[in-house]
Image (cartoon, rainbow, N blue to C red; front, top):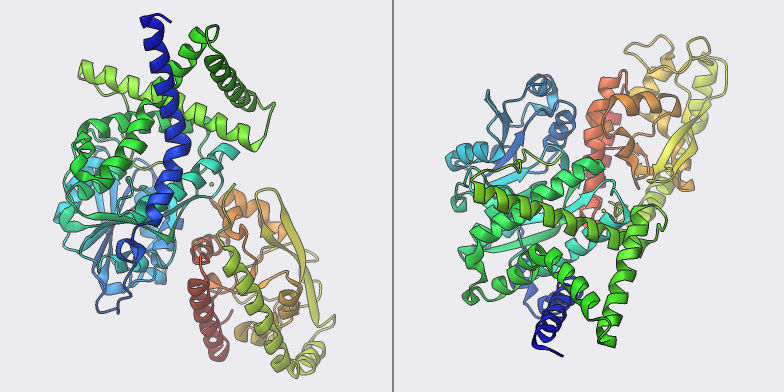
Length: 608
């Protein structure tokens, strides 16, 4: 072997090793090292009394978000945090649509009477970074939480995140990022691996950046960013970590990305992120200094190596092809690479829809965008230009929101409550049936087809039972219509049943059958489903992996739906409730609170 061939061989083996190390060895090594750390010291939260909780400024940049900001506002209104310690700042960056109008109309709802919202309406469009730089340094709150309009956060997100800051060494807290609808199997696998890797990084006290969907920092640690910053949700946390503070992930905090991007949007987003990866490497290269120890190791093995992966893969492939005729080792390496890339290409063409092929395909596309983005940024930097646009806010199949332990506990809870409630309510059955029959003809028990639990591939239907509160054949002449205030179709007995919610007692049988839960989103009628799905963003996702309920967060805040606007307001409540199902504790506290509110509605006759 000549000297030239030896150099090519050494370079090929080295690059191949880096590819294997970055994708396979480093995640395993990181997981093993994280287990050796003191988890109580690095990531445990300290429960705080309401008086001890820090003040929080929630900052949300927005640019032309008229279609989605209403659902986000209702999500924020349901956050579990002391009202006097939470201040929401909405940064409107030169919006040219009706975003401000939608915000003003939404804030008229009584739910927002106690939510402290401040609108910063900038007339010109300067970008997310300019607005954050202008507002955050002026904030007086102890903590700053950043969130995107397109992502809903779990009801207890601020509370759980704030508890971590009782440790003075914690500077950043982020949560578990979820995609409502993954674009592909590869994307699903990728995000599961990313979340596992972030958890391991968190156990070592230094997650590598955060996600703009939701993260929290100490206000005093914020440093203004250069105006051309691309990946702000990486730079901001890492600047804080570089100062000696810890950054952790609270896995019980959920940030749910509602928008599913198109292939074109995904390509643009990943090219921009790749450009940001090169930019952050240049600006934070000091983190590779060995004095940072674990942080330097993770930054080098993760973000830095990812930047050079396309080049390593090309060198490994070309070098193996060049030396395949000289060595069986390089021939085997070449065949392995060709086989892997072939699987990915076949998956891209839709010929091989296997999970493994999908993961390889997603990685291949990712590294291609990585190469394009970093190369474009490098060329632009040499020219003194910046063609990579900065974001205002990016507009896994999904992992079920209701985790297995919580789902099992919730089902047992439903059976126990439904059984006990039926025993108590059975003496009322003959009295209510007699009252209904005496006033109007027709059966006392009314049945109707409703939509139940949904998944990405299946929508279930079931027959729901109620005590009849309207005249017989109420929709015979009109077809399916929503109830209206003082609806003439509602009988006198029916008005009493609706105000006390006694008309819903027969649904306890639906709970025992597994069609419904005690608490959950309102079960919708198929007749209205298509119209509501078209009129309300993310409406169809409200019952993803969640059973509809007899009562729910939306039901106790407002009555029966009389128009599409009523349904629209409930969507935010439904998504917020679903995000609270990540653990037995938060689910149980939420359900007990809602059941208590329901009894108040029944006793006070506040139903509609």
